[in-house]
Image 1: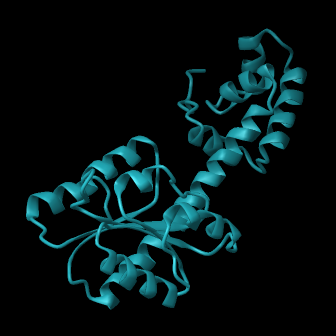
Image 2: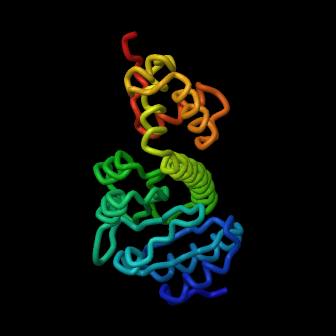
Length: 225
């Protein structure tokens, strides 16, 4: 299968099974793109090839496990510039940098900014395959974590204003009677709200609820009794 035009590539990507990892290549050297395309396909991954930074930035694929193979020296934007830009946009796909003439300061800067690998051309196929495999596994973990966080936020959004108030106080360790005093409601009412909070948040134990609150950025620091 030959993928020549990037603008025609993503309709094909959308037709792939949702679990097929995508390996994105951004390199202005057509020989590099073509050789990487074959290597990626042979491993059962889906290639997405881009000639320029701008072409890539116009279509950020984030819906499946993926990794980004990024040339450091591109004609329009440098690979490090792309790394910074997509980092600002919360694009969590792991990056593997490749370069024909790398230097230590550049590689250090890339790795400090979160790159998973920094490889010098010509690249050993086995080393690159292992780097891609590790990056894809990392992407899968990222997507799973991000999905769980979105689900948690959606559940929290289903809580009423009062239920959120009760949850916020309960996770600090306050007893139902104390929560009722803080909110000016009865202990029985607090128990009812607390039960609905546990149900809507899908928390089976109090510890579960505390952990969920922490993940949502709600303070769980114990209040003086």
